[in-house]
Length: 249
Image 1 (cartoon, one colour):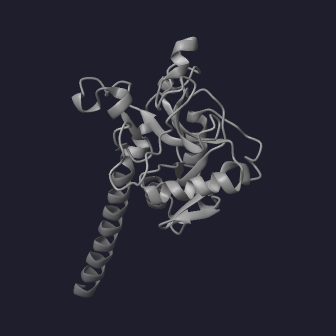
Image 2: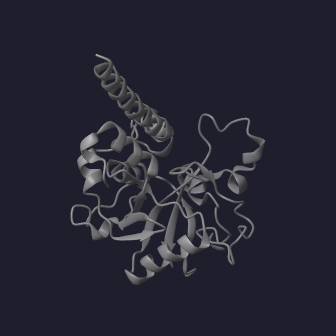
């Protein structure tokens, strides 16, 4: 009888630990998942759009073309199913998220150089990145984001702020923002607003479009472009915790 009680206690302890691990993984992923429940009308003229949830089968078979510090990445034009697709910023982000990935964030010079090389070697004219300006609900009354064109940019995939646009980023040997554009002035310049009152809210890497080499530009989010996806640790943890079949990625 005592042995049976002990065995039952051990089984209960294992169940409790497993449940705790799942809850912990889900809690880590919650910021990324909660975003999917928020409308995303601020980046598009198409109303009522949402961020996509990951698709476990796609996560397990996601393209792994190249990597940076353990994170897999792919260029959309190199994936047969996406090869001819050019999409707006939100659609690009949603395609990535279905694979347990997100648009690439260029937080360091080393990583930025890698992406610039991919663009150069494959003669890619432009790509979407995870860069976004914080000018929507929740960004108001934030002195640290003002003025927005200098301090209001962030990486949507990681929610990490991008350093001030008008100076050399800390740890970098160059400013990745282009020094020219449609207005022939340093980026970001929100140039399209003067043309059709559409804000340039998203960050694209352009390949010598303004005879400026490969550089960052602010671009209106509705434009359609190829994109680069990278692994999202949050989404991978979430799928692994909620779908036991897909524990090993």
